[in-house]
Image (cartoon, rainbow, N blue to C red):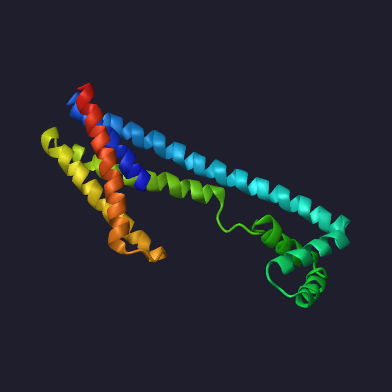
Length: 208
């Protein structure tokens, strides 16, 4: 959503200042949002799908090693437990217990050695769609004012202002999942977006 707001705002601000044509700004903004949202959605889908395929291949290889070389894997498991801080006595008991169940053995090896999760909560399609619609929603915010007025002298600052406010709010909301202060997170996003607006405005002015 942040990417949609910042990219669209920076681009259409530059186009508005450089062209001084409201229809061109609306057309450009619509094209940017459409193309970029699809690109971001597909990128998210493909990256998640590739990651899952790589992880599944790694787990498949590890599963074969557990079946074909059980004693070697037990020694490796013991070493991993010790490395994690368990005493040798406890590590030996845990290794014996884990080795009785191949599924449990695979999960422990995946977690401790491979740093891979054996289960995936989110599907690539879900992640891709979330990315696509988040970008569309974010991109629509800076473009919306251009649909109600052709006076670019008024619309450009309004578009920038509502986008910066939305980004500040978005940054503040992210603190629900962290321990950062809400105003710091909001201000950070606000300043980064302001830089994008200044760049867009500057290039538009230069070209214009």
